Length: 274
Figure 1 (cartoon, rainbow, N blue to C red):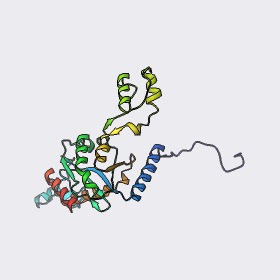
Figure 2: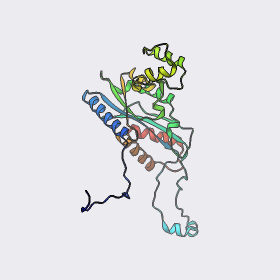
Figure 3: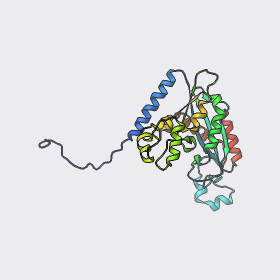
Figure 4: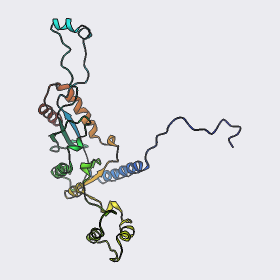
């Protein structure tokens, strides 16, 4: 059929990038749920973590090329290139906060010194599930802002946000534990079934979303707060990222390369308050 036309069959040289279907489905579901909550008048609050470090200063500066090209002559004249930018990032502090449409939530900031100086900057290793869940207990009463309607807290899927208190049984679970779990959740089954039959006919059809329970969701609901999770790789849908960018620009403008972590943390608190 293509004979006599300008088309031919060939292997295209260029690559194509496709979005994963599960991510597009998650994004659609997230946006639909967010729209419903806003229509109901629920207060939507966004939460995120970032980090700051000792010696935070400008990455770039003006350089006198005469000094750079003639260092010995410059030294004789008492000139230098100025303070050096640190080779690496020093001690770090983790910063957690929440923002709503009327600004940062008063009293929701949480800043603590990290024990790590890993170059990859993975602050989630420091903000573990226990710390995060305690943080949720502290801020949950602040999120509704006196409203009788629930608040919605938008978070990502970091491991520290996702500790399961209970999960659907897996194949590796013993038959005894599997039966105990089914009884606890009032799910009927025949006692004579083998473990394999029990898993295939009773456990497998269950919806994970109905039985896999995370600690954060439970803690939030106890205070009238609904957890809404961002799709993976969608930090651009969290407006607090704009705040982090502004805060870090402020810190780089104001701090020196020899400032200690205590000074950086104090400057961060001041910037968040103002």
